[in-house]
Length: 118
Image (tube, rainbow, N blue to C red; front, side, top):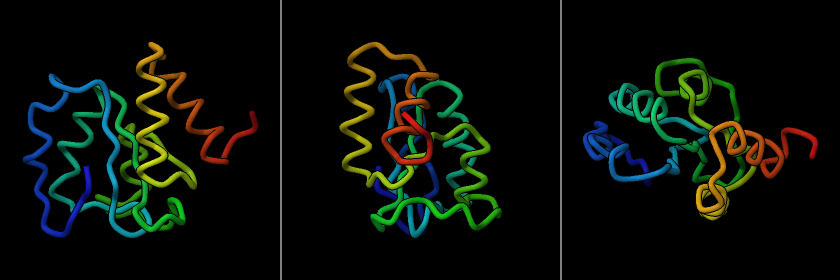
């Protein structure tokens, strides 16, 4: 899902019942509009929600306001590291197709995203 200014999260309503996971292509260095936060947090309780930056530079982890990358990661979204949304989608799809659980998804993104040792 590509996030744009003014998103309210309505596109996420009921999504957990129809998908096994989602990649969120965020604004800037990992931010989404504050209106999306409750929906993303609820979705992350049910399926892997991967947070990627559209900039291609990765997540910065610099801000702490509601909707910032720090806030979203604290709500259970999966960090992509330096993977862009397209690469993150391929990795998530492969992991889910192979039947990996949430823990394995977190570990795979930590390694592929460059913020954990293999």
